[in-house]
Length: 359
Ligand SMILES: Cc1ncc(COP(=O)(O)O)c(C=O)c1O
Image (tube, rainbow, N blue to C red; front, side):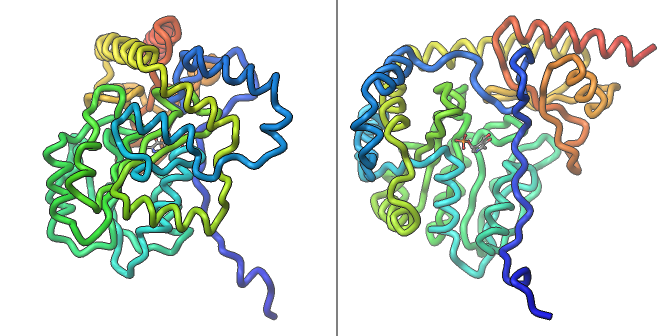
């Protein structure tokens, strides 16, 4: 017998990292920033709370003007080359819907952000994954000379942390002028070089970034994209066919304040990079190896102790890291860079666990 169930759009959803309900944990599992957002963001939040009647009563600016203006000044990009959304997940989802609309498969790495195959399934976009090499590098040749309906990869890649040089990024964009190439730069502020200048040269390049990592605002949900005017206009047309007011008024105000404080942002990123480099040394001394990371996390494997065991034992000690039970990476832990104090606690506990495992 026919049923409404026959017509349901069923999809296996993306599973985000755990958000523990208790406070007294060390949370190194979803690549959040351990430092507070810029002071101006907190002042804007207070102002919003004190004077909220008109702001809550009225719809927010559908063009997100205050935010795109701040981004335009910070990055020296015209406002009509900027798209904003509710986290880069929203921006990426809109980009999939807008640009990946061909019968040919889109291409992305076999080990990458696990939301890509979910959007592809949701929007019924065929896809073909390209294997990273043995050291987890993206192989540019795999994306060249292949008929495709679009290309997407994070740079640096997640969950590996590996950065692809700008020359290779350009090579991929140049070789695919008939498709849109999306470079997901969620982690670019921790040591990579953004492909942003390339949008002037290539009208098929879309770059996405987020406030969730380097700007300490994962809870506010703000993401953005840069691209040619034509790309951005196409995305806006799709967005305005969906929901005109995706960005709420508080996010617009607080996001703009975050962008205005360049010094705070640069200091915060530098602190995380320094802690990351210290943590690399300490993890090596404990017997871990890892691909070199240019992100706010390290993807590490211990030479003799299984990652799944370490993951469970750390959790019992209220230290949360991320483990992916997936082919090729099931002996790795993805560890977010926290404060120096948090990393000290992590390293001490890892040392104890490794000793305990050996006896
Ligand atoms: C590679 C990559 N892209 C995009 C995102 C989404 O970030 P957000 O939606 O918080 O901006 C993440 C989050 O972890 C990520 O790892």
